[in-house]
Length: 199
Ligand code: VGL
Image 1 (cartoon, helix red, strand yellow):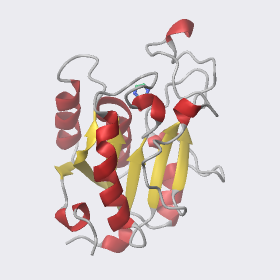
Image 2 (cartoon, rainbow, N blue to C red; image 1 turned 180 degrees about the vertical axis):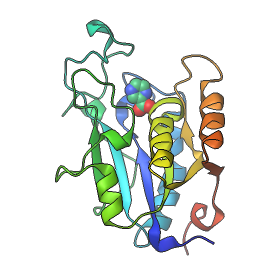
Image 3 (tube, rainbow, N blue to C red; image 1 turned 60 degrees about the vertical axis):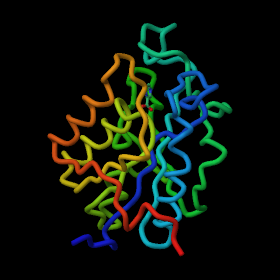
Image 4 (cartoon, rainbow, N blue to C red; image 1 turned 180 degrees about the horizontal axis):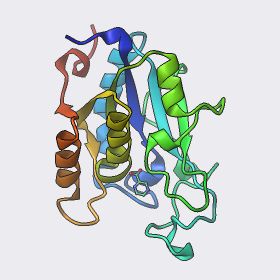
C-alpha cells in the first residue's frame, strides 16, 4: 500500500551538460525528459518535487585538468548547468544544489542543500517523507549515489526504470548500478499510478 502523502519525487541532474551536445553527454540523456514530464505532471500537487543539480566551481579536483576523472561540466551559472529546457519543473520544485566543494565529486543529492541551506535529508524529514521516487541522470553515478544514500537513511526508494540513463564509461555500468540499487533494497519499476498522463 503506497501512502502517497509521504512520497516525494526526485529528478536527478537533468542538466544540459549531461544531455547530447553538452560537456559530459549521457547517451540518450535527453530521452528521459518526456517520461520525467509525465511523472512530474502526476506528482504535481500530490507530493513534493525535488530537482538536484550538479553545481561545480570552475576549478575542482573532480575535473580532468585538476587531476579528476571528468571533463569540465556543470560549472555554476553556465548554460551547461541549467536544467534541460524541455523539463517541466513546477515553480514549487525544491532545487537541491550539490558539487560545490572544490575537492569532492558530490554525486549524491544527499550531499546537497536547498536554497535555504538545509540538507536534502533534513528537508525530507521536515516534510515527513518516507518514500522517494527517483529518475534522471546518470544511472551509474548521481542516480545510484542518491538512491544508495536514500536507502541508508531508511527511506523506501522506487527507481523510475523508464526515466533514467547512464554514462556507461564501461559498457554494463548502468546494469551493474541497477543491480546494486536493487540489492540494497530499491524497487526498480515503472509505477503505473504515476507513469500515465493524468486525465
Ligand atoms: C555525474 C558523472 C560526473 C552524474 C556527475 O550526474 O551522474 N556523472 N558527474
